[in-house]
Length: 338
Image (cartoon, rainbow, N blue to C red; front, side):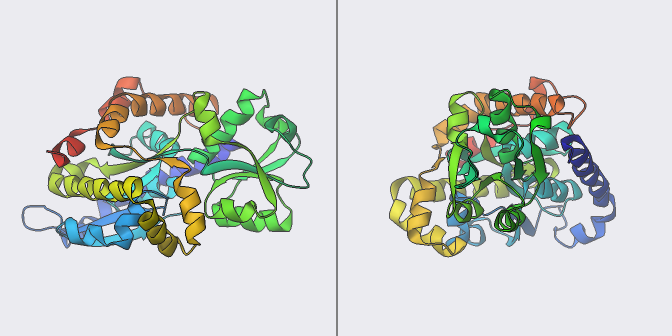
């Protein structure tokens, strides 16, 4: 299955559904007041192990945002891009790879918060009996990963670093649940994916590399929070309050790991031990670190990711670094910490 063909379908879907914005104005008007301010905010989640889960468990969005809240679950960043392009959600988390893809294809949103910097929570796993011990051993193997995700980006870089070309392996575009089913059937030899599916694969599999190791080699991935530009312009107070919620949730993650693990385990329906372990596999940033990353590291990461997507034939051209800098903002964090 050729990567470039799958990405082409994904990008086309984003733009076709983006046209729905023009036909959904009537529905949107019911969710705004006479001044165009939102009465409802639609928040996308991928149930990633970061402050979003704490916010959901403690119902901080409902308590702090000052408007009605709808939470919409997604399995992948490419689905988030589609929903943002259509205007069906206003704010969401998604990975740095689909963020770069969305910005490169003019999905009009801004990055304003970093949910986490990904460590070993996203890993390349092989079956124990596969005979594979290193990435270099993957030649001729079938590997599943969700295309246009941070895991996909990390996988391609892991292969590239070992001098393995795409033609040396068979890459399959599978959503996390489909990866687990394919793994059980024996349809794939390896997978690059995240929890909770990663945890299931590790019952009879082992990690041969992960995103923390790749970050040490210059391949940084993160889970970002984005907001539609139009929504942010009309509702800056909601976005600022959203950041305040994330700050409060991050404080729990960083300073009360036991409470955080308890709440995350209940949201994800996993054991508290598993939740405790997963929390250690991400880096959660303070407000000052957020501003530092958003000012420098994140635009550079997005640019590097977009350049890589061009190399893969996934997009024709990548925007200049200044475009990505213009799509990343610290103003809501700065307002939130005043």
